[in-house]
Length: 620
Ligand SMILES: Nc1ncnc2c1ncn2[C@@H]1O[C@H](COP(=O)(O)OP(=O)(O)OP(=O)(O)O)[C@@H](O)[C@H]1O
Picture 1: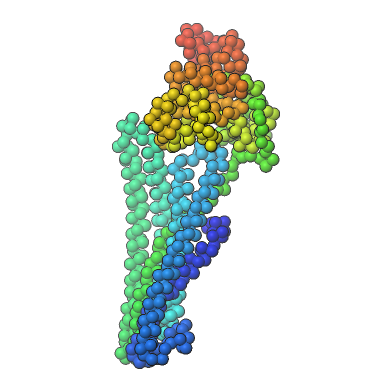
Picture 2: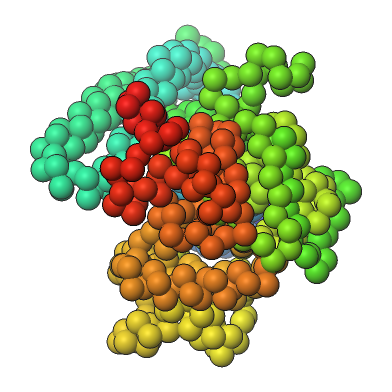
């Protein structure tokens, strides 16, 4: 909370101070009418001396008419001042709270985007979303409501107590004797309420994650007719929230009327003792005469005690919420990005595209004991001792069974993850020594899951090359064999693709992703199953354009359909993270190993299965 105040509150402290002053003025001005009313009853209507606390005697008119008008004027003025100060407070406090929230939200998002893929692999979308939305909202609620309400509470309690003590210390003691009781009750309440509030917060998070999951997975739910099961899970989570909310509210609604009852006791005591005092004189002979006006002021102000104190439960809730939320917000901000540009990173300029993998090993959760050498390597090592190279302009095919580590190998080139051992160089620069921006500028990537942002087709092709000309976008689409289908859509390049591009087919999405890379014009291309989602004819067309595209640039092509990489300058065969074979298509067929086996299967020549592949199948 201190950090929130220091980092984000300080730059906007003027708004906070203005809001605070506005709040204090509004509170104190609202106390004036009962005080003036009491003074006017005694001084003007009952013929005593008319005086007001904090008002110089010289300002007060001498005649009764003048004094009466003065009192009316002060009361009216106090209402106007309360309204004005409330307005100032409302605008300033919200300007402060929402401004801070805006800064926190944007900062948090910026820091989160800089985190490496490993972070996103581990986190649920709902979890990250709730940090950026509901947690920042909790902070805003606290800054806006709780902070100012606690100031108001303090001001009211102190202000009222001060006035009562000034007017009649003995009667004030009767009224205020209940305050320690209220404090004890409040402390008890906070202690008992805290775990209930915490349980409720956990239930809210749980329900949100459940809902988020259920909505993302709606297709699976429908295709497996699991709606009742999913509804049941949401019902359970919702019911837990209901129970936890009720447990919290039962306590809150015990506390609030309890406080009101205590305030009622104070009121009855004040009224009883004050009334007795008016009729029979000072009780037990303690204190001076009690005027009826003072009594009226007491009655009014004692009632005003209650409302701010009853706010305590809300303040406690908002404070606890904000504390948990700022832990999550700053926890996210403090996660170090493992993959980032080094201090002395250089920019790759005019890259030629020579890529060298030098004894590269990698495991998703790090290789244990790697500092001490190869010993103690984790079983989950996904890429093992891979060495390979691609000269500028060469095409390298990467093939191998599912889960062999092909995608991972190429993600390392883009630094979506960093190698654990060995090094990858581009034009002789270790990829860890060049700026990430220039690296990703030099390497174009079309992944297996083509994601499109909600927006138009043109915007999606332009993504990463913002502001490209319409002509360049069309040119890229033609090269990716996408122009034709785009122009057949009702709105052409301005067609909106829907969330994640759902309004397009898988093949159409893939062609848009390829067009995006064409526009990027990188020195190195990484195509991870880039033609897997299209029909044979489109594949042929795209393949032709990809061949043209990769002619004068380095390309790594991951393919299950081996015909895609048949003409590559070199092919590496990966199995269980290791390169088990390498060579051209012909050379690999001659080796009669895994590749030759895969080729035979795809050529419909399974009879010919032999060698390495045949024995693997036999083993399985
Ligand atoms: N983000 C991740 N976190 C942890 N493990 C992962 C992650 N991504 C992949 N893996 C694991 O790494 C291994 C290699 O996966 P990878 O996607 O590189 O294989 P692939 O050869 O490209 O497979 P496919 O041909 O099915 O695309 C698999 O065992 C997979 O379970």
